[in-house]
Amino acid sequence: MELTSPLKLDFNHVHLTDEQFYQLCLHNPEWNIEQNAEGVLIVMSPVGGESGKREADYIIDLGIWNRQTRLGEIFSSSTIFKLPKGGKRSPDAAWVESSRWQALTPDQRKKFPPIAPDFVIELRSATDDLKTLQEKMQEYLESGVRLGWLFNPQDQQVEIYRQGQEKEVQPLPTTLSGEDVLPGFELNVDRFTDD
Image: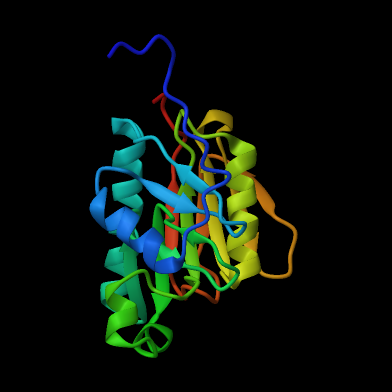
């Protein structure tokens, strides 16, 4: 069978239970799927080498800080969190404070944890729409995320999201502080090179 036009799937009208969504992800590990708070399935494209390298660098820096402080748990972009407002999201990097993580049952920790991370990082890749990522950051805040950084290499800036505050935009290069969420954590961010 020859396709004459791109295959388009309409995920706006698919309504899955939590278990159905979990099974869909489990049986299709090659797909990078999220579900927003309205239940819309979102299939995300893979990132390029530069974006993947930056994401790994940020996770390493966060992980080194966390190993020294032992204050929480670090998660990669492969982890889907079942947010309190209904979304099932996978930030590029996330951190959850230890007592909140330990309060989950072993089964909850094994599947998609029903918890909003305390901190998230999102890194805009060449294929990401900025407005969509900004909406995702707002969804994180509405679900209880306390601090979030949205890196936007295309505009050489980072957007900082905090509970109860307007977003702050800083040009790159810059040094970001983990503030009271990640005490003592600092991330030095250079200007981005092209992807």
